[in-house]
Length: 221
Image 1: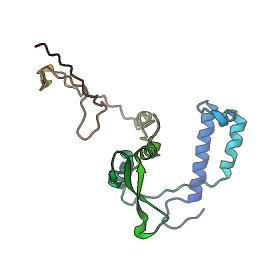
Image 2: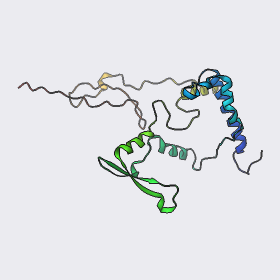
Image 3: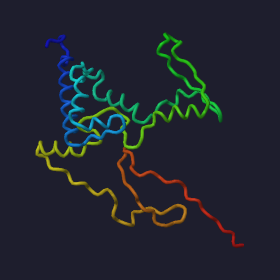
Image 4: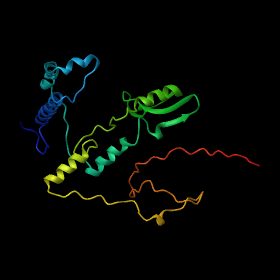
């Protein structure tokens, strides 16, 4: 199937290829018992019913879009980074707030020109309700992205890549300092501080600090 000169791939070919591969993997997961159905979709646990449910998807034209990024890989990472550490609304859009109301800026895509930017004021409870709609339940991924380095399959994919490349797995070097004399003293009590984690510059630590401990003072005078 022909396409425009300089185009990366024919869109229809890419669409049908992705459709076939996606549905094949979905049917394989169903046959292996990896899919669970509840409520109104409980009947899809039956193989013929599941096949009939997928039949219209084979005739549909899947929307697949692929092109070279404008600014290279760094631009893609910069684009994704704006969504990984922000939920629902940026701080710059918050205009004012008090104990009862929140005012923020929103964009009306039906309007044109400067009238697109508008202000909205909501009751604090309603603003919190709308904000929490964007908070995903536990174990859900915020980024609609998958690939060789996706978090769920990254260890297996890296191990498989090293196996195919005949590269030995590097042994993890201990990062904690073994010598006890290198541990710093607590500035409050003077005791030895316990190292709970050592991480490299620029990385995010796994440990999260707990809340402050309440100190109970007893007056014995």
